[in-house]
Image (tube, rainbow, N blue to C red; front, top):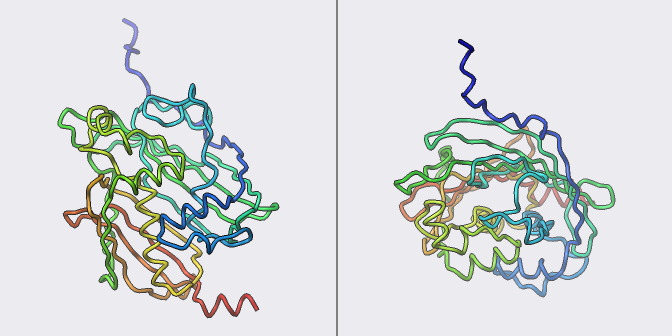
Length: 307
């Protein structure tokens, strides 16, 4: 009897590793001023030539995908740049970023994206595929921002409708030196999705989020959680330049939640030559939803380097 070959082997995505795409964009005044309003800053303080806060880089270079290439979930269809992973749900789970030079309003910038890793795993909710994409933003041939972005693909939700967290980010934050709360209201969520041209239906279509993806309602954009968390940390650092950012997201927040943003005071990392700040976002039950580690050059050192 011939051997049984009916078992389907795990898909091999190795040929997608190393695939690249390039996109150009202007660091536009309109988007910068809208980001300022989102961060409760004076939009008129930003003009052509102004440096934008470093974490605003992510609002630019949004994919302009024709309607025919949009998937049922509102994301661009897979199989062009990103691999055609069969798992239907996609979540942003973290990033590691190095800020080399400021991006200035009016600059013509180029973003080169490269698929750097594809890692299948098995979690509590079933099979997972982690994809890491390295993005490099440059201006006039000089690298300004380098980001390693991590996303995970998952199965459709189980019948109990309770998506499990992908992983835990609670690494034991030092005692909080500051804390603030923020209501996730529909205007905040809509404005960020509009700012970043994000049409993922889980952020605005409650019926889809509940019935198709198993959430209890519209889902907070994880990138917005990080945006607000970094904003809160920057306000307490006296203008010290942000050089590094490492972020992890573990569980979703939802429209109507009041999240708590909290962070520790800076701790000196002599080996890296940076002041390190750890901060996190907590859900209404006090559980960590996101955590960031930020590396700052002290304001005094930055002034000395500029002279």
